[in-house]
Image (tube, one colour):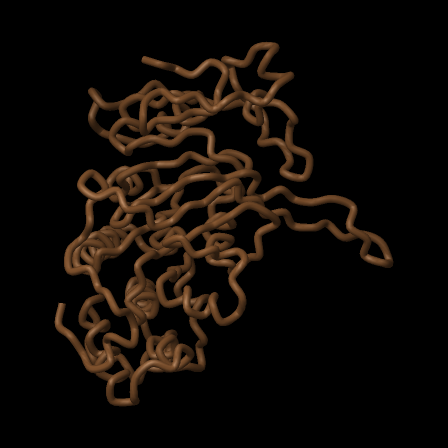
Length: 347
């Protein structure tokens, strides 16, 4: 990647190639028992009468250069998990370590420094941009907030990152409403890349786009991951896209990760009945790859008062008495494949 004036002020070390997890196991992100509860207020005095347990005990690690896909039904806590890691939402408990730095206990100055290395691309590109700001101002804002570079150096950096995402310099003085959805998402990706971060949370970055544009954005993200040595937390409900872009996949249900495995293994041999039901819903025209459709009955329990036993047992056809009485253990199927279930499919 070409250099630009003041680059060392943004990051002292820039990885020239992607570091693959199978060759280097340097840990970038360590999430331990992350919890995020939202209080429920009622009455004249707005007393707290309960909590929505949006994220309840999520733990995982991310290696440098790796992409972890986070999937699950709407409302399972995927987006809250991503925002809690970045402290866009303040977590209730747990620990998050980024390159050994304690994110959740960082003061304002330390958190500002962490922002250089940890960025997010939101689901709604139009809603995440100020409609009164030009594209130049939107992309450049991160450099200004961090106090990096002179106006000339910032301008050169903006031109550089604009080329990386496939936009023309002529768009810089235009406003968000003048662009299509795909172009707006490219602007949001450019805004996230301007500080040359090491870690990106991609919060359903293609769900608001036309199908014809989705593949272009996915291929752009893959290219940027290789060129910029980025590490992704890719949040999505599109299981086919997650399979394509992810090295590992974590499946969330009602605020908890219930299964995690390398992408190829999870899609070939899902062990949790919920994961099996999710994967059976993937449409395909290939008869040899089509799974028997598994239809789940019942509703997802309330996150205000989730079951004290297995959270999936009210909808599970495999549930037995023990599932309704105790919290299932985390079963280690192999070194990279874990599942939280009393009766996992071990085949």
